[in-house]
Amino acid sequence: MLQILPAIDLRNGRCVRLQQGDYQRETVFSDTPAEMARLWEEGGGDRLHLVDLDGAKAGRPVNLDALRSITAAVSFPCELGGGLRDDAAVELVLNDLKIDRAIIGTAALKNPAWFASLAERFPNRIALGLDARDGRVATEGWLDVSDTSAFDLANQFAGLPLAAVIYTNIANDGMMQGIDPATLEDLERLADRGFPVIASGGVTSLDDIRRLADIHRRQPQLVGAIIGRALYDGAFQLAEAVAVSRSSQSA
Image 1 (cartoon, rainbow, N blue to C red):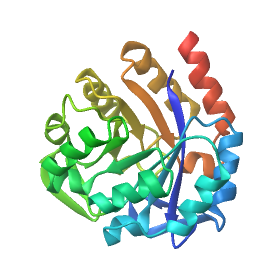
Image 2: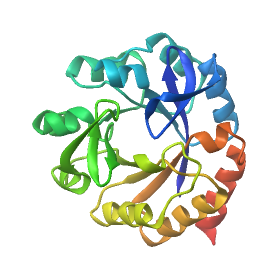
Image 3: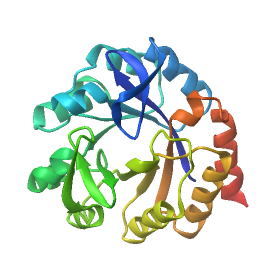
């Protein structure tokens, strides 16, 4: 089954969306993220994808009050990325905040040995956040782009008990232009290498869900799709996306 993960990006305690990760191109959708989380749970989402945008810039979790309000408001599992760069931050997320998965991006590139040890310590609870611009890994809340290929970074962690590799083509994120064929190929390539892969960024229409579900049928390691701006802009309803993912599975 292709899981559907509605997204909540947090900045200054509010639910926002950015275009291509640009902090200057922000749209505020809600001042009460917990209410938004309840809406996505009622809509049938399989898991909630959370990003602490302030944390990604600060290098540590920042939106703690909003995160606690969200996990207190819903019962479906949540994953969180943004600023998780040391043991204390990860343990805060997994133990204190009652979040199911911690997503590590910047620290996986800068300290791969630590990331590998973390995945071993918390099997199936650590996800690799693989954010790419022109095929290269972006870090520090997408503010910097490294010289490392996204695929080269992923290959360093082959065989580890990762919960997922969450792959984002930054060029697509928040732009409402759909998932391009090259990104679809990248997702399938990652899945072919044995990683459980979640698509993030660019899901704009129900046809995008169908395309991802088609890949899932060929390669079940493509396990999920994160949906953000399309839901907030009303391009389709979450329940419709869930229904498409389920019907495509049985097709």
